[in-house]
Length: 333
Ligand SMILES: [Zn+2]
Image (cartoon, rainbow, N blue to C red):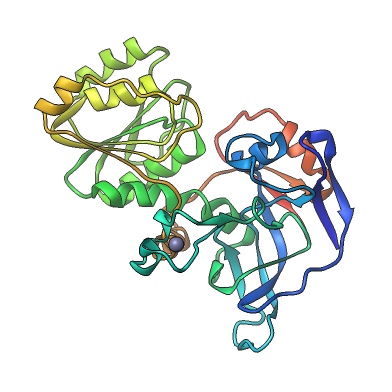
């Protein structure tokens, strides 16, 4: 089969190669892949840095494939053969306290498709059966765009309980997660405002404030404050801090991004006196993935697709400048 194989930690060492079709082991299914996404995590694997440093080479990339189950491991039921599925990238250990409680997002021993094991930028991929989640009528490209993005944002929303009656601020609204968070805010019934350093589209029912500098953002937010909740999806410390400063008494803040700044500076006294709360979330539970796909199937959250490339041009997909917010999709078949 054809697979996007990384043989060294440089984009020049990413090429489509002919490799054997993997055989599903016990508890695994074989998925014939239609689409897979371009992710920051892939870039980390290519560079051999951060969470991508653990990947052993050669490695087939691809964390979020969508396709169809075409084979199952030895001794398994064949009931799901032919079922359209999308793969949840994070594979929980299934044995720890978090896993036992259904909080797979918080499993400290989880592994990731395309990082710890060969991924789905290939004609076929094997995954634990539980990770192959039914996508029903959702097209493969949309399911790929959704499966690693919408559940994380949903996890953030659920962690601080964003709902109807809340005034919600989304910081980092200009990126793909920002667009999803704005849609989710509207779908949740919250009065939704986004903040972005760049021009960002606003879905129906939401507004986006554009501010070039943190000082300008603080000024604009002061005129809009107070907010009940702030969800940060951008990872830019000064922007998130400006959002937290605009929170109401007892306000809640959550972040699900760490891609820009390692440090967040807060006014500790104000944080304490105003009884604020701050949480961090990453990954998502299986139940959250299913809830997220339901929102996508209902058209309430539509993750944007920015560009599509055939598998043969996967390296170009990583080189292409990112102009519009949205998922870059690799069409495998
Ligand atoms: Zn676990």
